Length: 237
Image (cartoon, rainbow, N blue to C red):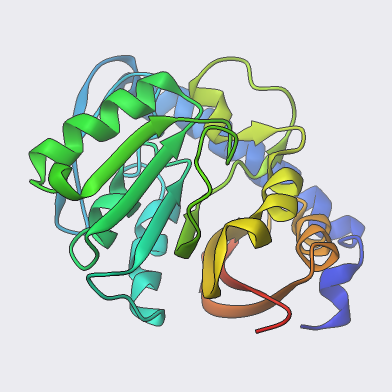
């Protein structure tokens, strides 16, 4: 990992990120808000999904689909234990359930929990999924996972409503980094999505401080934003 990842982003990059956030905000309000106002149906990477109001819509933003694509970079089998943290519609959990028989999906948003349960039934994987409401790991038992998926809230701030929990938080990534090593198997790893328009260097520093090794498994350049999938492993692996 280069030194630039551990330093504060340059001023031009922070200004670009702010402008990009504003553009996404107005694009959402002008063009996409109606798809959040009522129940919608999406198909993402071949999976049919019901999206309830107040639940992050993976049909509008690509990060969830990219995390599904990254499943090909890790070894999973029927006996693997997988956790989809911040599951939203359940997309990541449903994709992992095509391989593994032991899937846990968690979200702090009760609407997302309901949504994920609907989609597990819709995609006929409910028999291998446990879906529950939890603030990160707080509501989980002591199971250790071979894989943890996390598409976190990128931006700083206090969420204004349930949907906003998918976008912003004050400390979610730091708390996730601190707890993650205690929930991985000896050979386990996490796949985490981060955006160049967020405070990425600070988040990467939190992972390092928790004794996690990082590697980039996929990177997608969208001109105004770079989406990176990081693989996190305990340093003693």
